[in-house]
Length: 230
Image (cartoon, rainbow, N blue to C red; front, top):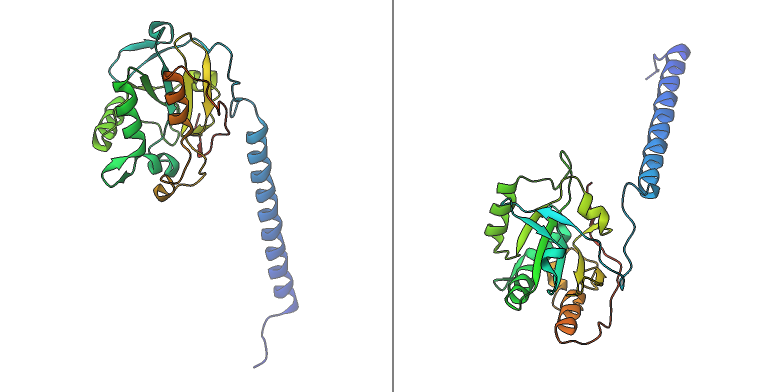
């Protein structure tokens, strides 16, 4: 069969295809530049804190309207846990395996031992992970979570103060107000709950050593997970 497409029509089609290709390349390049800029922008994700210095002072309000301050917990071990239940890495540690969730088990055990456990969500309004106080409490109740309190850090002040970049991410403060651990929950950068059993749990190890008055062997690690949505 003889083609009925004229040279002029073929030329127009080629120009349209070329224009679309250029647009895709330009848009793609723009998107990549935006992503790289966001990564490089210190306002996008804060710098990680270094352990061994005084932990930044803070005052924050929980989902019930109660105020919590680091100064108010002087003499106690304090855990700050950044979480986002929409993040698969957070879900990994809250998933029930044989009826027990990794995060919930730690919260229950260490709060019984006198540790203050503050779960923090730093997602800003309109950002993934943002939640109302009621929804945060309902979700915690549904999952059997047992922190001392849940902090809605919707302005990101607390998160930036502590260099929170990922969910989950942890900061552990000793009774003298010194930051003793900062980083990941464990050494398995995976969203699968099946990997918990064989992992080295840095948070448990740090708390057990600290509560026993012993040095913390691994005091700083690179957090992994979803980026905090400031």
